[in-house]
Image (cartoon, rainbow, N blue to C red):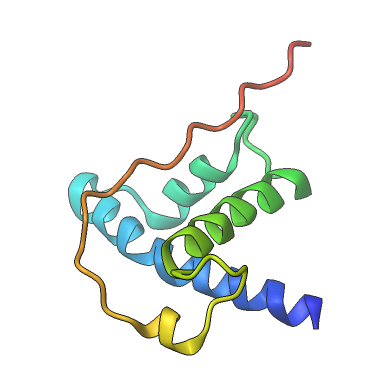
Length: 102
């Protein structure tokens, strides 16, 4: 059950990230995969670790829960997930954690 929940959140995160990726490509011609890689590569070393990938999707899942769990019970119902809400100004994604000093 936990793995199917994680997969659900990961898919939802990808769906919510898609418009931002499309905007980036339209705005600057940047390849979407490159832009996503750069956002996920928290320490900027040109490689993704499992921790960086997990942190990226955890942040996306946290955003999804904060935006769609309207009754704040820790669960998103189908009704909450599909409810249409007025668009608000987009908040920028949190800045990646600084790379550890070497």
